[in-house]
Image (tube, rainbow, N blue to C red; front, top):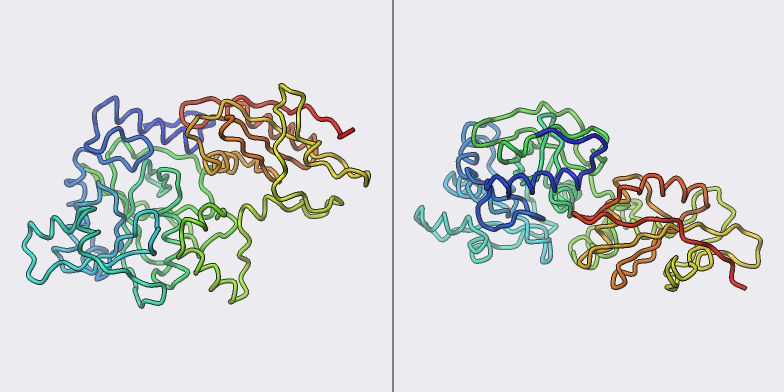
Length: 379
């Protein structure tokens, strides 16, 4: 498949999901939107792993819990390799080791490779374990022959890899494999790749084995400035890793904390962490009146109104799109129940520049309404 000009990661995801549904290329669970697609022929693609020397020599393998990777998990168990599977959404830890019953039959191993088997036949692996993963297998929504990878947008595969680096469980030479349908292999513009994105060394499809030869360095640890407070609340193991790295003297400033800091060199003082909600631009706006530094002669901040948010949208969805477009504000005010948000920028010029980049902003299939919020000083 070929990408459109000016395409975003989310555009590519939707393009792949729509195509797989329209061509009936997916198995249960359907629809594939917002998932790593379980494509028809996934078991056949997984069998190609047996031909890779990196699989033959690996003794400890980490495989994502996605449905299309079930065949890889079974291969690892049949080959008597140590199989590590990340816990769903990392709620209870980083990953679990699958431990089949002694003398397990092929049918039992097949059950152990399913999501239910992962829950029933596993033990947690702690942060202080001596795990040394020799092969990483991840799911993807799209991947390029250069090794660029796009997941479903939640960042868990990237984060899991970064966490494994932090705990010493992977090395820079540890190979990464992804398994996809042929239609998921497409050109991905270089500019979409970010420093925290995980690249892949091998791509397996039902018909091909692709060695990417990717030389781009993989993440060397957790990029804390990409982590938000919402993720910290949901992932206890992430909080423990942050404490560990903080004690080691590393910069562990979170994304939300960065978005609430004034730009270096500014004469403004720190902006309020949670600015109070105000009326929308239709009611005579908001924005600078909330974010302004009154009484000291400092300039008002400038705000961009974002409306027509999907009813099920989350603040993390909007933040992800803003990061991908390179227009992250100083902070944002989220009013999801009213299907709107306000992006607070340092000055009108920055806001106007952001507005130009946001004209085609959308979440999923919904195109959002963006406009400069009318500004007024408090009387």
